[in-house]
Image (cartoon, helix red, strand yellow):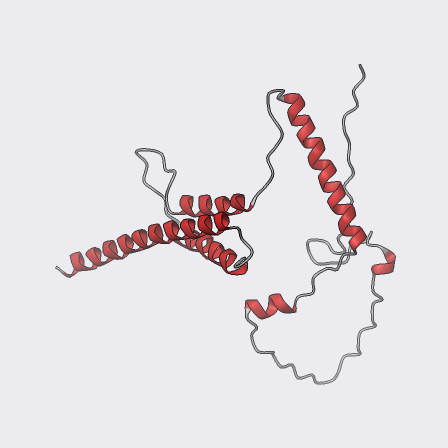
Length: 193
């Protein structure tokens, strides 16, 4: 029995390199004509614009526009590639069943685990917990944003899960920040004596 290895092709459709330069192999129809540079002036006054906030810069940035056909082709290629990977995994591990469907709870769980690890959970016994308080706060804030943006669109179970996870993480965050503040205060009090 002659088995063929599954193959797939990846086509890079990005117009620019990682450095921001236009790629040499970018589609010709999409390349813009270069405008000739203005002749240098004798004296040029340059004024600096007011600093932009990150939010304003993000809103002003142009996002690439893809056609419905490009999006459908990309999704089909992704699904086919995923199916091929699943098939290879099942061939290598015959007892493994099909992969489960990704649900909203998986998103919550991903942020929850990130926050818990940042708060020091999962530390080996006997080792000092490594706390990344800023990383934990970021994960908690992302969950809060997710809660805000999905309000009214979640099932009762999803809403309850998100609310419980946020409550638990915020309480752990408060406990750790209070312990840090008390430790700092004791250090200051110890130096005063």
